[in-house]
Image (cartoon, rainbow over all chains, first blue to last red; front, side, top):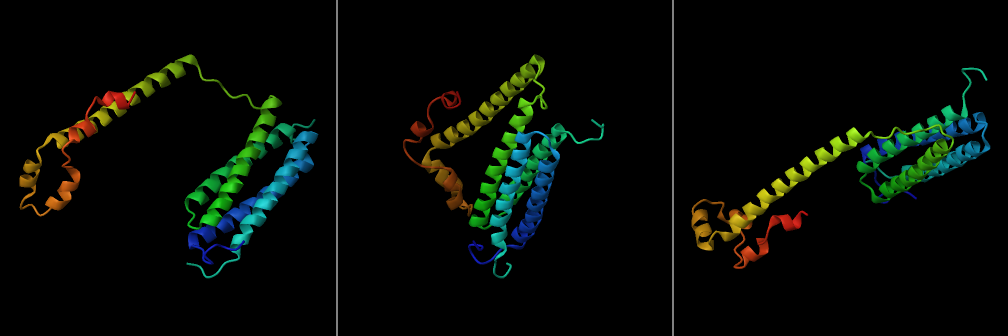
Length: 70
Length: 148
């Protein structure tokens, strides 16, 4: 969903950008961990976390659908 | 196994640390948020991250990879003594406030008016000095009863 007021503060935008980058890195790392580990339970956990952080990324990315910056 | 080979233990510890860092970053963003919807979305992601970190931590614990160091009895006794001092300080601080309130309550209203006359700030000072007749009942009793 777009930003509620159609506006976003400069601080929120910078934070959002940096957090999206972090979530994106986490997805890459968790997928990498899933490929590297040997224990099936740990692999499943890494895969599940990678999916969950992909969802988080997508949810937060919707807030970049915004109007003018305050 | 080669010594530089990445083990499941290393991967699991790295996973836990990444999730911890994510939680720290999310918390600082929540605290800076103006928009309620964005804030709520961050909070939802944070709650999920807490659950994931716990899941990974429990797995590491189960595997014997993470053995938290237990506090020694001397450390516990020291902490208990420090907490007792803090409780005493809080009680003393609260008692001072209580006594100030009691002193203000027992001053006769006429005296307050005389004190405030010609000072220009009388109206503001009256906010600090309630003039209810039963003020002593409001502030009455021992402060100890509140802080047990």
